[in-house]
Length: 566
Image (cartoon, rainbow, N blue to C red; front, side, top):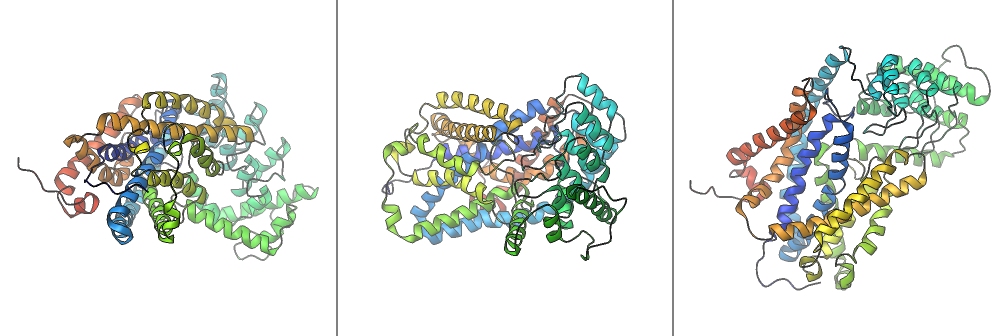
């Protein structure tokens, strides 16, 4: 460990980089209504998934890694300055309290925005439009729109921002005619989602018996297994709580009483197909479960599974953990939860004793570009276990998703061990222009491989490697860039750095509300995107100046500030 500096030093470049990462979050969320993303409450009339999809991946690919690296750096600084108790007290005040208060404040607003957004979507859906995208046409079973889109050269197997293909949407919504049409015109009947599920899994889960029949008749594998080992039969008998969760996540309207019967019919049909018989004419009697879904043990047996009781219990526990990790309890504040977990791990590590801390990384492992030789492989390991999108999974639940925690933990840990090291503080990212320039080929390569990652393991590995290389090149390049231009104190940059925490904590309901408000305006998407981001920033910066910065709220977020004289 390096000795504690004899003089007080303000790391203006890292303050600015952390603030920049927070402000980019407003841009990222401001773009989501212009993407085909059903879970987002606002869906704009004029979307462009090419432009905003690229923007989403470019920002998401390095924004949070940069934040966690800087957080690890400042965590080590605080520990060296205040000790373990002082660090813990600081993090409780600056992170835990905003997380609790913010979560309580955001939830009712998000529920209201969900209803408002659904009403705006329903209003637009009631009006025929010649601009339906391929996924909306599949959901609605609009064969004319599908024919027009095919004539325009649209890829019938292209996945939306959620990773869902048109055939899967048609299966989820029970659009049997659209299912047949899509397969007959080139949609892959056994295409795998990022989680390894097929369209038949989707139809079975939501009790779409006719869609399931069409899929099987046209070549769907009734015994295909997803990444968790579940077959379509097991998907048809999964607990209703899981179905409700995914229905809410995907925005699929369901009537629970009807769904219970429909899922039983679908399960009976698939079971008969697997057993080699013919499909039954109607639902069988309930097999003894009070919810009418069927015994999951019997479902496993019908699917040819050989799990014993212990395996089933482990499977249930894994399902519970998965749901708790991914249910969006914290919404956009998830990063505070993960930061608290990492601070806790940090305190455990430093509490073990000086033996761990006595070790010192060689200079080449801290300096750029030598650090990439070990950081890229180390970060690649948890990245390989995540497959939602280009980088880390979106998991905002009560418990951390372990691959995601490990992924961000690498950035956090590297920032911590680099504190006080001249190889990092003076020379990291010194060729920042070259690093940033090299990052974009990695981004383009990863995005090119992204559509095929679900079906080809080599493509998944390529996406993960490209995303990790992009993240580290962008993070180190950003460190060098901000050191070059923001290492000296600048009152305006310092003000924005302070304000950025408040802006990010408070922006999401306002951003979504603005997106819903303008979602049905028939104008080009770019002015609408700029309007959403501009109004969000303007309104919240005014609130920060006149209602937050010099109050107890500002003191809790950034420390006490004294309003300067006019």
